[in-house]
Length: 69
Image 1 (cartoon, rainbow, N blue to C red):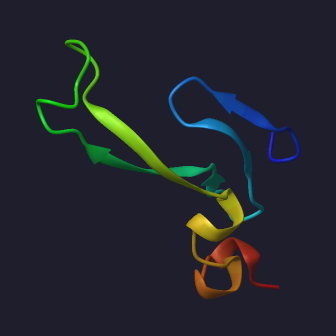
Image 2: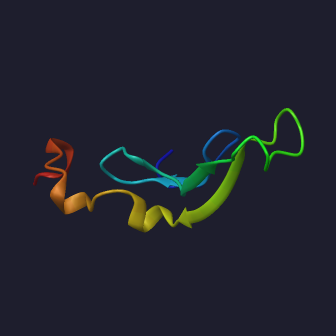
Image 3: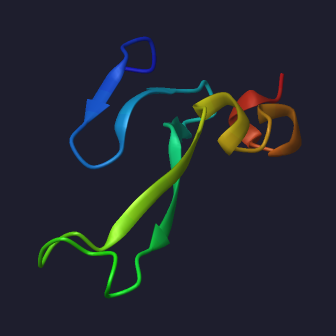
């Protein structure tokens, strides 16, 4: 399972590391002011996408016992 890429409808494309953590891109949003919205569901503006490799701490810093040899 860890070798297969993932594509989650909520979190997007990703992968599972050997320590079991799922990596996926993270997104930074800003809430729009009422005057900026063009409809009922137009509430957020996407500001940035953080790549999955930068969004989570490195595997070496996690201390996962599954990775000890």
